[in-house]
Length: 404
Image (cartoon, rainbow, N blue to C red):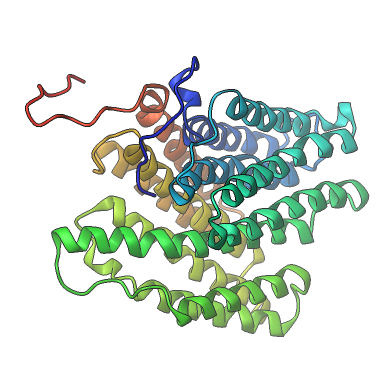
């Protein structure tokens, strides 16, 4: 995403001037706090007033609470760049924020308000986001970017199904895999756009030589194959054919990543972390495939957390840090604090995958939770002030430097 300066003047705080500001801040705070709440909940020391089981509440709020907030912030910020239109801001943006918050409370207190009311409130958020995004893309006649709404719509459908499964079956099943699959396809589509682009831009300036291979037929085949494999995993998770398809998708995504010249970006953590984050896509696909092909060797939860903490957690943190810097007029440079939160989220992913293999080692689970919380609460501390303050104006050639 390239920064776009145009906004509509209004009597609202800077926090409501662009979609990334409230949703990145609230999403990161929610990600950190809920994981700290989750472990005592998991071990029975705390409880919610939710009809969801503790594990379902955790999965739901990571996918449809945290991730939905980040996806919304990204889309509301990217779409004006795609269409040239003004961003959603002010009262319409506040309405979306309040709808997201209402969903969090509705899910937490669903045992009190009833499953249907909770589902209606919670699911209305992604429906509103998809409608707002489709309206803006259509108004800007930017038809080629409508494809981004396909995984968003699948994510919405997964949320509806999640509530239904939790109520009628007592636990989610298909819906959790459907939500994860939709999230991964979003990463493949958006990551496939921004990772090679940002890598190419940096290499052209700093490290001339081999550049990322542009989007082509191989990328399209990889996304289609991955979507088919994830669909098979979602609906036929025990079939050997699904396992083989996942393994093939892992190989294709690894080859896709290698074509982006990430090995040449070691000097820029902002670019490098995008490649590291995408690496968890083939890692998760590999683990999911092996969990079917060799179930005695690889537990299914290893794949779930390779996808969730690895691909989703790392990629979202990588994107929100870069987008926050770029869209607030800051230099695109990772300071020590930013590098530390990158290390924390990658460490959290590795520990959480390891914990799936040795579930009796509770310290691995606690370590992963601590690192995850440190990464996202660290983002809120490092970037929270930036998100609530107006964008820095471009410095004039003879102007005095800004005082920070």
